[in-house]
Length: 242
Length: 131
Image (tube, one colour):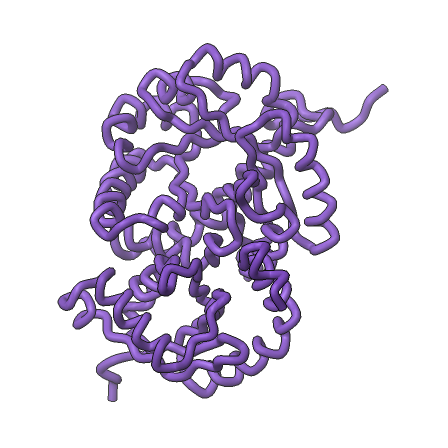
């Protein structure tokens, strides 16, 4: 049986956070085979391409991710039009219902993530149905549970457990990521899957592991195929040119 | 005869600029896991710090196999010790203490240089240049 490979699709590069090289080294140390380095600033994407070379030299696969945090659906569409083909993953932070609905309908979006405090009001049955049709992944960030008081931590865990039930009922893909911008906030795959395991019903250990391994791995693989010049449409690619 | 409890041994690594002694770490873990699980939760998910090496910052924690995920999550949720940013990472899990001890020795040797570099990155720029 092949060894399971793990992925963390949300490692943020911010001004106050750790250097990308340090983040990649830490991910390698923690046992990840793939990480996605993300930024909220489209102008910083060029700087991040060097991270891929660092990853290659350390023996870890690095993907680029853009996080779009807009409260206006039209602005979001503009960004998607301009930047979709320059990154492997596009994540949308759904701060309100209008943005969440637009992100759920748009096929250029890969991942949607939410504020843990109001996730239940935005990720309602309508949103879940739209997401299920489009096949987008819903992401849970581990950092939402860090650096908060016990009361808030309990509230976040409760909200996420209800969200997991809604999403799992429709068979939608869920991803657990660290969401860290600092190496001290990064966690091992086992710790991330422990969160998933406790939020899911019992006897779902394999699914909990898949949320930090096969599901994110497959997402990156499919997107890389789409970005390839030989891609025509899902299942069709150019194999030989005249 | 079937064992009443099947123990698991969690090999963890403390990522912190602090140098904690065994008793101090034991107190930190007890306090943190009690606040996370509560008294009832702790009675269902008991744990014991078996060993901790202050030099390599590697340790072994024992818990029942059914409590493995809860204890792992509890450890992962620790984000600071005495106001200093810190983390506990679960490196491996074994079924015997003998195996856990041998893996701890291997890890301490294998990842020594790695941790030194990463721990410098954890410190604030002012702390990192002090040495």
